[in-house]
Length: 313
Image 1 (tube, helix red, strand yellow):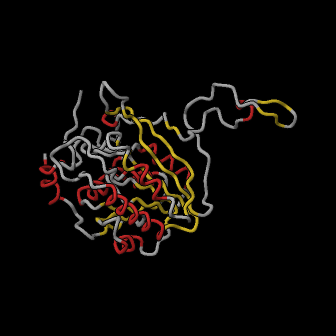
Image 2 (spheres, rainbow, N blue to C red; image 1 turned 120 degrees about the vertical axis):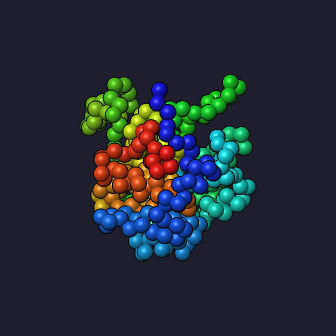
Image 3 (cartoon, rainbow, N blue to C red; image 1 turned 90 degrees about the horizontal axis):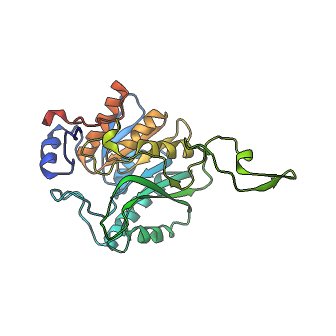
């Protein structure tokens, strides 16, 4: 079996090699030569930074994937350190409020988040309670995405779930989408025009809607073209595309304050939306730029086993 060409990109030794290759430094903004997107090295907590990249733009859809305050895997990094929960909630308040300042009158906010089962499921419950203070936001759904691989022990249930919180502001556009899963089970009977019907008779589609449990999205990245070697928190492209197709129209503006592997931007590019994205780390800003350039040049959405930074061998 082939192996990835590069270890985790937050590894301190790898970062030392990649940083000189990064086109952006702290505070820099990359303007898309095709005029669609912006990529930057900025801080999601900073109102000034968010204003700088937004430049008055009203965001129709936010897809945020902040750090989960959970340390996973590699010991050779200081990029995923855990802070106390009070500090984490202060951090969360800052980027949520920056998002609200930039959101259109009718907008969507999706937030990927984790729950550390060894630490009382932090930070998920604290974050959800914090969100209740924002009266302009309406809680809409708590979505679970099933990972294809997880972590656990022989004395506990394997953790294979990703949490996705969904909020709206105002009354934004929403389009029903469907999975590729065939609709085969009858049920949900009700009377329509005096006739007792089941869901198969009433449905306009041969496949089922995704609902708030997403079981149909593949996540074994190393077997897929979209894989980004070394990107430890990559999200499936199909999951981001589902959000975009459901919660935006062509030409709308999408924002992601935690770019990481650039999946939100690639999905926006594919689906003809504009994307504003940034990351505090120049390595991931550079990775996002390279991923867009590779997609436009080759049509490939990732590198699978290849190295996105071939200059470092």
